[in-house]
Each structure stands twice: as structure tokens, then as C-alpha cells.
Length: 86
Image (cartoon, rainbow, N blue to C red; front, side, top):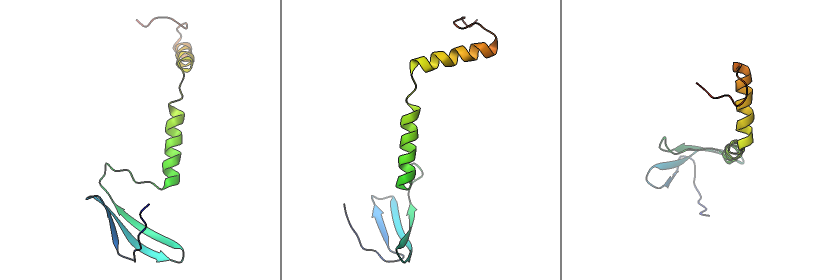
């Protein structure tokens, strides 16, 4: 881990396109301004981890889940389960 000391209005560069600027320092809080290209996602770590958990949860679909969903849809449409689409 690289550790740097910066003062207000000083900037750190990551590569050629990401700038992190110290916007304000109040007590034990530091406000950062981050300038990055649109295709680079920037999140607080706790938000990033929540997104990762949601993505992992969403990939947990089982084949049986799809079969049950199909049966439920056919019931709603008035077709018996397993009936072929026209």
C-alpha cells in the first residue's frame, strides 16, 4: 500500500485519467473529490461490497427455479404446465 501525505487542494493521480483531490479536512474527516472517466465505477467500499453480494446472490438461480417459474406463468396464462407454445 502506498501511503501519501496531502494537504487541502492537493491532488493524487492514478494513471493518466483518475484524479483524487483533497477537498476539505475537518477534524478526523477528509473529503475527497474524485475525477474519473465515465466507464470507471467509483464507489465507497461498503457500497461496492453490497453490489458484489447482490450480484453473487442473483447468480444463484437454479434450473428448478426456472421450471417453477414456467409453471406459474403457464397457470396465469391458462395453459397447463408442460404445454408447448404455438
